[in-house]
Length: 390
Image (cartoon, rainbow, N blue to C red):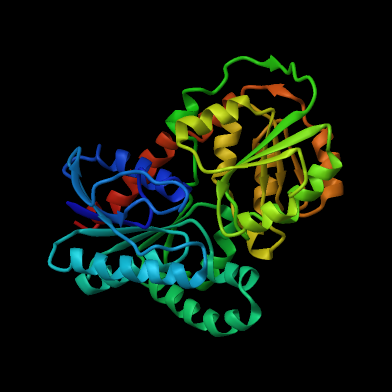
């Protein structure tokens, strides 16, 4: 059995999509008589972080094609150009090859569309792994004039892709109503994000009382874009917690410059470029509080950020400005987490005071959400699509 895996991001790139797909491939490799081919891109998630990777390699029996993209940033036009290159090259690479199943993991919809095009042309089953609701999100993050023109096109693209999927995995149960009402004939699965081995390896086993003297270090690590809305909350929090907390923000993205301008003159905010995963873990361990924020948009009430799983594994207090399903998940699953409504700096300060500084192991959470365990179950489910038909 041969499976084609399509993912815009893959190791050694730094992002949730890369980590998820790489972990899944590790589990698919363990399947008996399964041949894997991956079509992805050269590392491109952040312009400020580069990692070397070959354009073509066979690694541990997996054939990997990495497509070079034109230089791009976070703007919509740049992203469209980048995907167009990925799309054309992926079709070219796969054109004369035989597969038994097409698997596509997608957040911005277009990789799902690519998977549907290839599956349709080759008359093969399609398994989609969906990490976001792109059509539902664009109305919140794009100007109204652009949304008016773009949404019908993206809605058609979504319908084409999802209408051809044999099975659809949704990483957040908050997506359920949106997709099941539109595409009731698909088979749905709920393999969520999880905790990677790198974080499990350093997960604390015993509690440790905080010995913080002076300012508490609040750490955010990840994308700095419109979706995260750090520019709408961090400046106000930094002013209100001056002398009490210092913010250490690691990452890059389309709103980094706006954030830089808004925190200019504040002495308790530090912005740093993206770092490798090993360095990131050290940053988590050195921090006192791990911070998360999503902008106040209706679409984000359905998502479940992968960052939650990394944060929770380290046993540190989690301070999160989220609503909807993510807020519910934190309250139910993550001990010593404190949630406030996105953008509400007054409520954020009150929720900050509720955190218990120090390290508290989250053993039950770790046992439940190990990435290896979740991806092993998902790998079995992917392969079963073909095996059940033969």
